[in-house]
Length: 174
Image 1 (tube, rainbow, N blue to C red):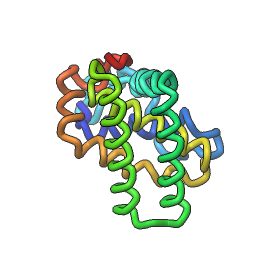
Image 2: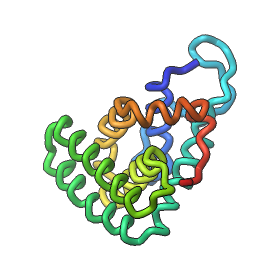
Image 3: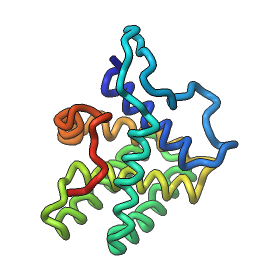
């Protein structure tokens, strides 16, 4: 079975494969097959394509809240500035993390029925989508900060694991 960190890496890569045009996609390993043996040789129900599609559906639900969507668009400009000015990866990671946390908290304050961790994932995916559309040639610089942000957020990790892992994540906000 893949570790949580390895699964997160596969998922972020799969999201880039969805968001970026073919020439921008990685020439690295493909993470699209389902029920393939993992490093331990045992079959797995971890299907990164399905998980990425669910996360994208979660992110697309953000489109229904125009105020938050506009804030994501505005925040993406700050992230893009960091990426295009070749800021240190730590600075970029701090910017991505604070942006996602702030937007998630704002969204949850507007909708008390919204689960913070779902908002966090939705905002993360939407931010990745917006940045990928605006600067596809440099968007991959967000891979490590996005991966680290998810892996290092104990609440989000516990939420995902509490759902039974990435493969059981339900793509609804409430």
